[in-house]
Amino acid sequence: MRDRIRRLLSTIETVLDGTLMILMLLMLFTVSVQVFSRYILRYGTGWSEVLSRYLFIWITMIGTAAALRRREHFAEGLLVDMLPTSLQKAIRTVNTLCALLFAGTLTYYGAVYAVSVRDFMGEGLTLSLLYVYIVVPLAALMMTIFLAERLLTD
Image 1 (tube, rainbow, N blue to C red):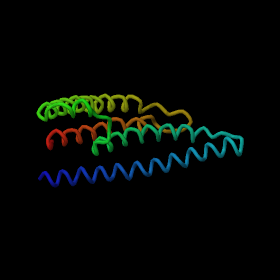
Image 2 (cartoon, rainbow, N blue to C red; image 1 turned 30 degrees about the vertical axis):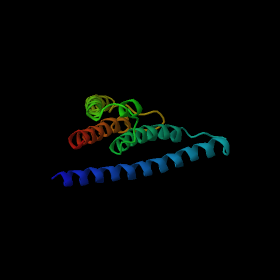
Image 3 (cartoon, helix red, strand yellow; image 1 turned 90 degrees about the vertical axis):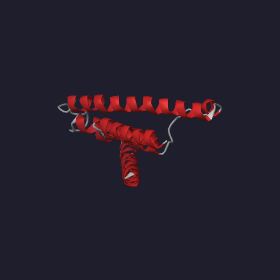
Image 4 (cartoon, helix red, strand yellow; image 1 turned 135 degrees about the vertical axis):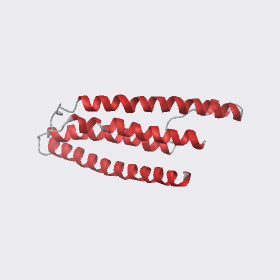
């Protein structure tokens, strides 16, 4: 059972990585269009700047979840490593529990906020802000799942 869950979470991580690659390429394209149109054509496109900003939000949130799964995020290190092993484990467990509480709270309030802005349109694009901010609770949910896995396996 644990192996199946680990494989599922690894598959989710792979999907997150692929999504990040696509979003970064899309952001590279939109920023390039903005630079070309502003400096070569002397006409700025509003949509590319707004879309780049929204893509940045998605990249940040999904990247945070992916980095958390791989333990590539900011973490306690030098001082904790100097402590006895049993105390290190206790501190890391408390840190994981605090992060789990934060991610769970972000999941809930991110969903509440995303739903509350569903009737608003973003500037420069006729796109509901729900589609911009839905990534917050989705990524926070992934973080919650990844932190729960860490809590159960460490």
